[in-house]
Image (cartoon, rainbow, N blue to C red; front, side, top):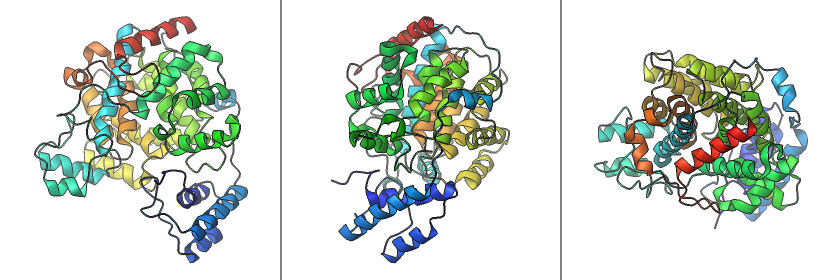
Amino acid sequence: MRLTWVQPEDLLLHAFVQAMDEGTDVDDLREEWLAAGGTLDAPVSGAAPTPASAANRALARRLLVEVEARGVVRVESDPEEIFERAAEPPPLPTSASDDRILGAWLGRAAGCLLGKPVEKIPREGIRAILEDLGEWPLTRYFTEVGLDPAIARRHPWNRRSRPTSLRENIAGMPEDDDLNYPLLNLALLETLGQDFTVDDVATAWLANLPAGRVFTAERVAYRNLLQGIEPARAGSTDNPFREWIGALIRGDVFGWTHPGRPQDAAMLAFTDARLSHVREGIYGEMWVAGACAAAVVADDLETVLAAGASCVPADSALLRAIEFGVELGAVPDRDDALDALHDVYGRHHWVHVLNNAATIGWALASAVGPDGRPDFGAAIANAVMAGWDTDSAGATVGSIAGGLAGAAALPRAWVEPLRDRYATSLPGFDGVSFTELAARTQTLARRFA
């Protein structure tokens, strides 16, 4: 067995990229790795095709220590300081209807499910699949019925998702980390309220999440916890994925339980994100929490975007990415917009927070109708057609668009296959209905009001 996202030779290549992003000079270390026969091509799926030799694995461990020693990882410790560098939040109602909260849950699930079978497939491959099926642009869940076998071999479905996420086999919402984290945070809030700490988040992970169900930054943080590193340092220690998308997918529930109070929601998201991320990775979760707090009470996307912006520094790369995507929403030709998106952010790994944040901004803005709200189906389809982390971007876009629309307004073609049921390995949640999750969320929202 070869575990992804934790092998020294694989971590090293991502550590080189992260160091250069932070302005740390590691050219000599890169040269040393190349001289030993290594490559600088960071693995797309978390592990290179073949393991390193014993000698190169030992070298990778040593170089990782050196990369870590050279860098200065700036760790945020006070969300209030972040808010001081952010815009003011817009005025918002502070009571959400049951229908809007259920719409957000269902929207998150549907957007995630749409992206699951093509997760890891590049934009070009997604288009090739859909064009071969005569279904470009995307308007419904994927199918493999009628797909040319040559196309299927060239662009294989996500291995884990294929049996449960295609039109012909969907039977409820299958397990996904994009849904597991919101459930885990719902339980955390039910048990501990708003005063939980990063230590509490760590305890919840270790008690409820199988190690094989966490990825990238979360897997490294999990490993760090098992090695005795304190939770407040688990995200910043030997973690080259610390500004990837993993925290962004965890913030929705903090928003839904604090309707109309984006900064209160972002405060909780900050505590959660600290366990695995720093800087832009943390900002991703804070932005989502703030946007989701607005999505269940606001009248239009513009207000939701303003709420998200009030939770992150105005000069952050995260907010620039979202705003760039939103600006592209005005570009009438989809291909032109996607070309621009990939031209600017295509250098990032498909699980990085910045390219996916830009995708989220574009997918929402490009689908806005005359009423100021995104068309739900168009928004989640755009998030998936863009490529990169298709299920995560689809989930976040679906959450926001679904919250703005409400459950009653969501098209049945997207909602009915979910069967109001979620399958998960999380203790106590397998088979839970989205109706129940929404009711429990509303109970917390009233408790925290």
